[in-house]
Image (spheres, one colour):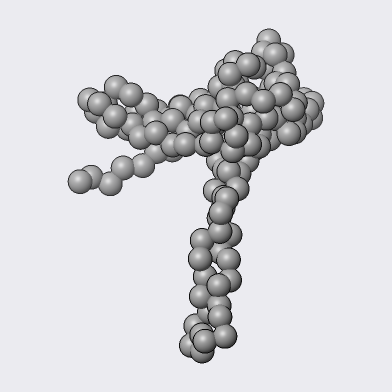
Length: 141
């Protein structure tokens, strides 16, 4: 099997109510976290014992966007579905890989305006783990 990878070019983000977020410059995708619970008893003498904690934190993501005054500004604190669509990497596949889940925009940074530089804004989105917990779907034929 060949080693594959992607540069991130072609990744798109859409929000179910605020529609497509255009011109992503970069995005830090979420980190899913599950705490380890210390389950060490008095009889343990060599190693501490841990069990996986539940529930897991579905995480959040921060995207840096090229500001576009023709696209509506996303709504803060409105529950909606965020979907990342990844470019197809394997010849013959027709279904893109996706990362999707419900949550809400928790932060929207307005751009700095400087002569000769692109205007960039930030968007932070928190997955809520509610109606549609975040899930990754593989690319397929």
